[in-house]
Image (cartoon, rainbow over all chains, first blue to last red; front, side, top):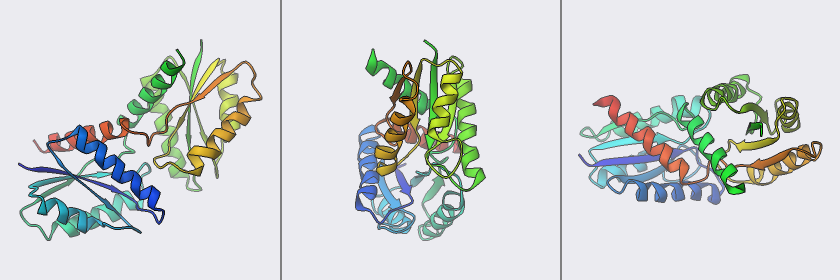
Length: 125
Length: 125
């Protein structure tokens, strides 16, 4: 199975905010060299989710895990993103598409925060 | 040394968004029972950062690690939060206050996303 990861954030009119997701995609590519990594924005900037799913399909992906980069629950992460993902997936019948837990889900988030706190304390020592 | 963690997010007019930070604080308390855990919002909702720092000091903290819960870099995480933290710390001369890397910093974020992707894949198996 050729696997793909599709990072999705809200999208911004500020290019530097969108550039962050590109940096994050680059870091994920290093961390997971066996996956194809693409990115998309829900609104305001290209590529949109349909384009992101298309890019994964073109790269030969048979399975896409969508990674919602939203801290807060709400309409964007809970409704708009799944709707756009379903709509894009419909155009690729052979492709399995699943949506992972959002970045804001606990307890992973709490674990990461604790790591950041410990690194900050170690800096001092 | 009595240590405290101070979670700080942007703050929202929507109570359910602010409630998320309270849930995250509760999860952190379980994960780090040796720390006092408080929370604060940069804007729009109480408690503000000064109140959060005061709560840690009242609880006997000698050292506070501030954990910025912001995904994107920008004026809020980069300027407003440090200014408010410095201003609040000035009123507690004996207290050590440091600001941890923001939640949006890599590579921790990429690691967490990869965990979420793997959990999502495992759900299927």
